[in-house]
Amino acid sequence: MKLYKILNLGFISYCSLLLAGCNTVSYQPDSLRGGYSDAVLGNGEYRVTYQGNGDISSIQALDFALLRASVIAMNNQSEFAIVSKMLLTIETVKIDLNLPYIYKPTARLTLSLKNDEDLTSALVSCELIGYYVTIKNQSRDFAFKPRECIARLKAKYQLAASKNRVTH
Image (cartoon, rainbow, N blue to C red; front, side, top):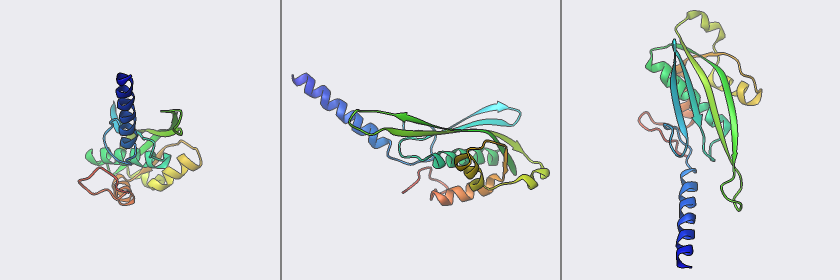
């Protein structure tokens, strides 16, 4: 009987820690609590993914994927970038019968790096990309300026230059 109580207490503690870890909205590399990951596809293309935890909205997951894409573009000295093949999914997770479902959004996109002045007529803001993907449910190619996306998203989520965590 004591072993059962110890195991039960251990399981409850583990679930509490797991849920507490999921309560953080953050822009960070992929970990147990979610985060961004990327892969080089070749020819100046990257696959960028942001997996949210139960505290991340779909627009936040998309914003953090766009922020990571913008950082990659800036690191490659790209003045312009194109984001395409955008996919926003929401996974429903049930951890315990007594707890509500957790909704975990994932934003995935393909980033193409461009330094083409002809893109200026097709430029959109990060907000417009989010609007089309989340509200209009449309996936198309969007040209944007990475430097502007970084500035806007860091301000929106109060990200300091040296910090990755969002403080709310």
